[in-house]
Image (cartoon, rainbow, N blue to C red):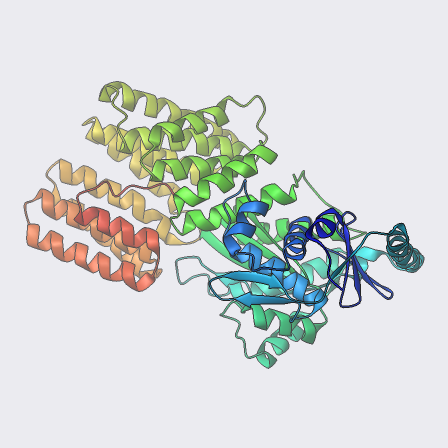
Length: 539
């Protein structure tokens, strides 16, 4: 029996493969099973059902459903997977390079009776669920598995992170909440069974196998990056039918883990003692996390709409504001970057002092390294004013990392002003702070700046001594970024001495390290040197 297109268009309920689909309620039911799907996935289903007579292109789906946000094709793939998990793999056919088509038999339901049946079925299930919740809280039914933490810190002193990080997350969440956390030893066994390793992030197929093997309805993937005193923990929550991403910032790795544990417990546990204030917005965190991912891939233009969207939902998400400013700066739109950071400074109340420190410091950094067309003397004075304000805030908070950063930038200003003695004193103070931190490679930036000061004074022997110290620290810690910075500084100083062949050799060595590291921002930084462009960027 055929149905007119008009009937399909008017219908909000359909029947297919024994399922009753209610697009208005967002419910898919069959027998005593009732599924609720995400809003975006429901929209995908609606478009496929209403156009089941034809192939619907991926571009059409993306433009219709994610029209206001720049997204990758993966979000559509995830929605298709969620629908296939419910209806079976054969309900939706993939046409490579063309799109998708709903191929399962489907008919519209237009009677009131069908609507009542759906509601009655779902209500019965809800009542049964509520009855079971009297004895056991629903949140406690969540079985959580943490996979080994992906270590993306560019050194060799954080090799403990993958397994010890997984153990820490598992044990702390289990100890401090009533959630069901699958033991890390059981997870490692399942990884071995699934032919995965602790050092590799699992594929989608591996995740499905792991969920089945562990009986886990939430798998947590984590990735730690950054530097000592300034870490970022990127997380992905993999549920049975959805994925969510986010980022946590902290001065230590353990603090970033604790923030993730607190977020999970606050959202899903019945019993947990939280400390401090946490903002929460599913969309802003998701958009922000995806924006940061694109930023780290140097896809700055694509990152901007996502970061902007996150800020529209959560205006006080200052980290998103910072990444947005950095994206503009790295696209040579420094004026827009400074305007965004200036707006951060002017916000009426900022609880996150470190973000306020960053805003002042970044404005100073931009004014130092990218002249904006103002008289240079005034520009450096403005930069100094912002950095001194950042230093004052950092000293009030006893934030030694950012005190060190401010001394470095103030020293750079004095070098550019030709005040070499003051520059040396300021940078030496920065070096002393860095020497107190875990992980020596923070010292390399200060040593490089000292070398530049001495080189501009014509003291090349002393400059080379500083660079050798920096090189030794970078090599000892296996930090490719720092090795490259040192080599490019050597190349600059060799060029200053008109030793062009030696300069080229240093730069070629830096290029080799960058390509071996496979990190886009390092590769582009060396390319900028060869093309006589500013090697500076905001990270």
